[in-house]
Image (cartoon, rainbow, N blue to C red; front, side, top):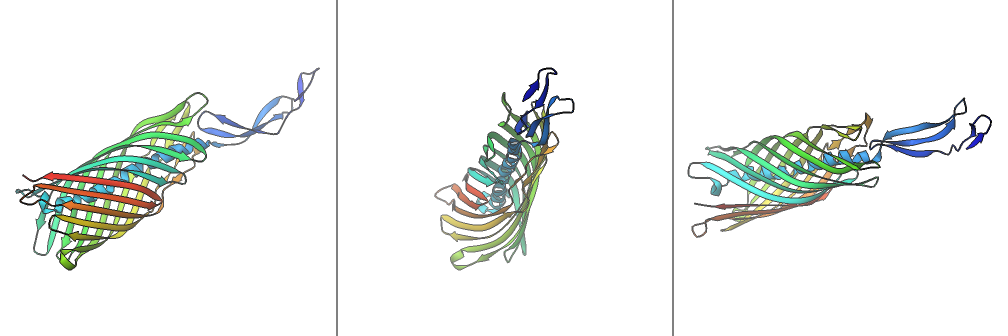
Length: 353
């Protein structure tokens, strides 16, 4: 800039413009200009939520991915309570399973989620002439870590765990047609590190939220040659994680609730043998919602979105107890390709007294 010595006022300034950042939440552009009195002032041309704020909604998506991993454990518990090897002499069935996996979920950017999940269920099976009714209760727990990856922001890391419980049930007609469902509710602990940064340090959060969900399913099982079966089905999973508020330095963040609605259609083939049963399950699932949004200092954060389709393949084997061996073993491995990519496995072991 040029300054007139007599008045000590600027007569010319560089007005080419520049970018600016304030705290963790705000970034924009502006330029130096002369006001009517010849004073040099910085004129803001544009301002909005900074690109790194996108990490916060990606972290919210990661928590829902972790929660959705529990869907298959609830299905396994419902199935396990119905198997005769899990039913005691008093008619009470008990089932437990633990497993884990690694998932890459596309969000517009993507998140990587590594989880361990477990479930314990207790129930009863009532067999009638024309139908069978199964019902039970369960407790569930999951824990793991995640990382956020975006082209426009640095990597963020965090952890998530959830603990809850619910109800499950199934009604089956004698011809193999069935209707099933479950309800779940619980608490999530979400912790993140270095999602946000200013010129001095990194910021995250350590918060608790509530989750709730349900699933409904309908299908039919057909008996084919040698006692083997084919099952066709459709299932709908609904999960919702509440929103949360936190501060990063002097900046205030408000993250909305995230809802997942997954529709899954598929078929399962089960091959039954004397000691081992084997099965393969191929399905397509589509996330109908999966949108995460929020605000930083009242400014809209660029949202994340997990909606879209994935192909799911599950392979499993079940070792049955007999008079020579009291052990039962259930192994499964599930792979995803598409909007969701990854592997998940589970194991259930029982000793028959």
